[in-house]
Image 1 (cartoon, rainbow, N blue to C red):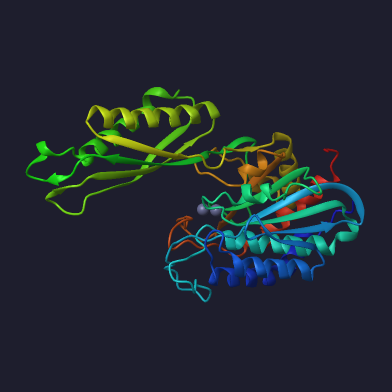
Image 2 (image 1 turned 180 degrees about the vertical axis):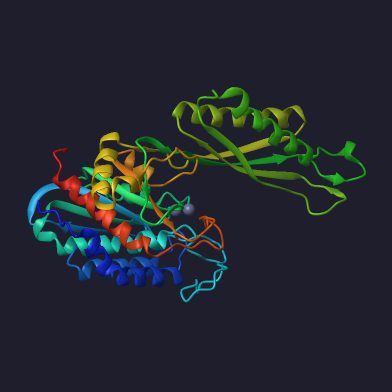
Length: 397
Ligand SMILES: [Zn+2]
Ligand SMILES: [Zn+2]
């Protein structure tokens, strides 16, 4: 295959269009499974490029198929399209126009970058042996959008041989990309514990079964699952993010509700935490004359990068950006829906530096003041395009 040696240049040439798409999407953020405007824009762009387009995949997902001139393998590239329920505080020409909704995780950039990749590769169609499948997924933020697209056939017809994706990285600078082989991101589950006691007058606690005190005991006891029952060599997190009970100072309520998340890497650890969390909550509630109902929802699995695919990405990005720009990465307890794809096909997920050279502190994702340096967009386009080209040209089948 003819490798476009001017990939950075090509990406820079189309950068104004990528930036315009990113700003357009940023101004019109949509929550999980509501990405109607975004998916319409994506489908229109892909159609203009002459790709085969399927819409409504797994809800609001879009799939574009770019068939090279010659037969070969199939590589999948993925972006996510959903925004977060956050009120944006930035004042820019492209600030969110939707009240209380913001692209605070960079999915606007992911979508615009992947549209840029489609444009670059469509121009190089003559040099491509094989197929590039573009996956634009809904609901990455806890909605299992990738899983719904898989159930709707995104990995089939043609079957996908490898998959790649990227996420903005607010710690690293523009021009840098980071990734690691093996386990890279954690599995993510959520739980709700409803403690039912018996309410009454705050001055007569002996006539009540106080769900607040019982709830507090449960929250404290949950801290011992990771610290006393999981091997220190195995990463795990149990975090209570919400504890809600009562309405005023002098009434003991009937119920207390505890919500939280469980993160881990190993299935064995994950199952142990789920089992023990349920036993501890029910046991403590029972011992204190209340009941606890536990609703445990299994979310996305841990994300595993294929070692060989990581090497392939490193080689492609080393040529593209210089080897010093391709950094290692520590595993994190954050989760990523793309894990559902990497559970089924080999591939790699990379983190794209989006911090401007003069930003003394990062602007973290999931905050009302998140933003990125748009100079990173053409870097992302070139990185994903180079990865796809490298995979299709490789011996790996
Ligand atoms: Zn996010
Ligand atoms: Zn994200």
